[in-house]
Amino acid sequence: MELALYHPEHGYYGSAPRRIGRSGDFYTAVSVGPLYGRLLVALAQQVRAEMGNPSEFIIIEQAAHDGQLAEDILTESTLDYLIVEPNPRYEVVQREKLARFAQRVRWVKSLADIPELPALFICNELPDAMPVHLIRWTGSEWQELQVKAEATGALSFSLGPLSSLELAAEVARLPLDLPTGYTTEIGLASIQWMRELAVAKFRGTVFIADYGFDHHELYAPERHTGTLRRYHEHQTDDRVLENLGECDLTTHINFTRLSEIAEAAGMTQRTYEHQGRFLGKLGLPWLATLEGHTPDAATQALLRQYHSLTHPAFLGRSFRVLLLGK
Ligand SMILES: C[S@@+](CC[C@H](N)C(=O)[O-])C[C@H]1O[C@@H](n2cnc3c(N)ncnc32)[C@H](O)[C@@H]1O
View (cartoon, rainbow, N blue to C red):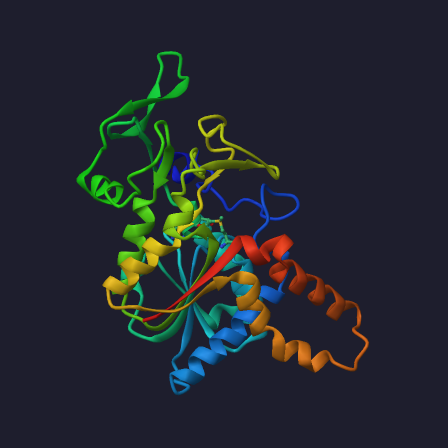
């Protein structure tokens, strides 16, 4: 999964950021339009005020992709911006897109390189794009689904022992009464990411928006084929070994586990709720300014974006926000 997504030449997220939105493979809150960035500027202002309005306050973004959210936020605010980008080809694209904000944007390669500053850290749909381990309950033990290459080059899954003690430790947290054949995934990479985020040097607030579940929802008996899916041109299925590098591969994230790891490392859970509720509240002051006015075309477009981001039938309910204090 890591190679299929991140191989520098052949991975889906390898050589250049792909188009997201109508002409891409999937939508994200960023691709809905600039309102998402505006709402995050409002969040940044709240966080900055809570911290006593420090002058060196920055927004840090990881998974900045083609720089669209950064552009939306930089356009709407005077804040400085730091992008965590390990992929040099993505950085080139982001630098080009953000050239007119060059004085206000910096780049680092990893979380460990973030300076000691007051900040709002944001990421939209990052942990769902991290590789996972697939596992199956055989009725007597958990085994791992490993990817096997035939002499013909065809790929298939074969069952083998769990590949690490760390995986075994996570597997030990699963419910005991799952049916034989139950197949699911464990996101070791996202757990490691949260550990690294917790020890990064900035202080302030962490905003994570993604689709995912609580531990008990993710590992419910009826979810017996897990959540690993591939996306291509807005179609989704579970044929995850086909057209590798041409399709996005993704899973729902385990919010409970990420929150536990964060708290064990000294962070605090501030909010955990559906995106619709969280962004809906952030947008209320803006909505209040519209009262009594007939919205012009630009405002109508923003109102449609507000609807897409918050309505339960669109992104409002399937996405959740985890806000952590750090
Ligand atoms: C589903 S896309 C989301 C893109 C964008 N945030 C949005 O919401 O439109 C996942 C993104 O995560 C990025 N990504 C994955 N691992 C990363 C890492 N360790 N550091 C920075 N970006 C990462 C990928 O390059 C890709 O751009």
